Length: 407
Ligand SMILES: *Cc1c(COP(=O)(O)O)cnc(C)c1O
Image (cartoon, rainbow, N blue to C red; front, side, top):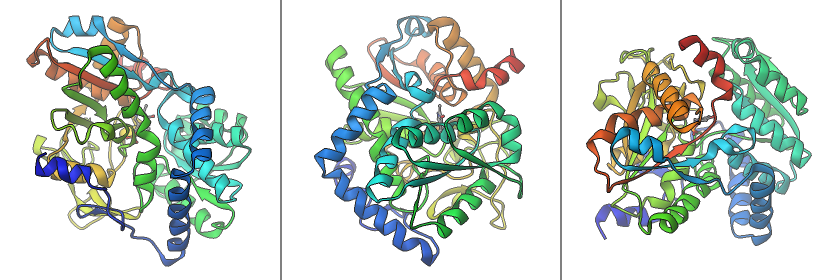
């Protein structure tokens, strides 16, 4: 085993939630106890077969797992490169992989005796998944959302309210996700005894990145089994888009120790490489500027920031990738060279969505379309013997207005 593979085999993160120098827990004193409680309950639940089987039943009957690993025969032929398989997370209830994590954390909330969950949402996808899970589990649900985002995503606001969630508009700052997060944190600090903060990606203070990875790793575990069944060997390449990083780490995790499996994470290249025009935190090698290590929302990781340390504004056509920080495990995987990170521009993602729609009959989420675009770039240089698994993290219904604008 190589040194790197051995490092992977060891338990990562360490006891303080560090992935190399990334991760950790940078929070006000009031949040230390609830984070420790969460960690404690989650460790217990991980070893409790009752918890695991309750989660497995919900994943199967409510969310729709296992998702298929589909051979994309026409896309493979069209690109003239490798054999391409799509992991169909887009077929899940509420339209994306996010429900995997929401179900897991919803059950953890119940186990902690907390009858209310708090979430923040940008485009509304995490809010809708959280609201659906809260309804299913009988939990009260409050979702914070910037008023700018509420206007842009009125259908998702309606969905959340139909599912019984309270949606609170946040009028501060840029009236988007960052501001919603601040309000959600304020609520959590105030109501920490009765409320669980249901974080939507592999981000934030320890133990969140590890918990979210744990609830998303089912993606890679299924895909590994499915590809061994179909091809009798492991894939050569994995592709996934990276917002906070939960669907990507969910796919990657089961393969980290297989050094022959290359991994590509695809960030939002937006409309340019200068700070403010993109959300590429780990793609400096591709010329994207403005990212360096810093602390945001409780963890040390790569953050898009100005020279004087202000959080930068970001841009992406796809709201799920439009965020200034990346999950700390990805920062570490990039640093040790286990995964490669790159970025795709808005227009390439739109084109890739159209290609997948026409060739395979699947309209992908624009987030997922970023991964498809990178695969389209690289496929012609791969051989027909190579095998690719691409995580199709979500479906494109929510993006129809945007797609129509570019049509
Ligand atoms: C939210 C979202 C993402 C980005 O989140 P990650 O935590 O990086 O996975 C990607 N794809 C879809 C469809 C999403 O809804």
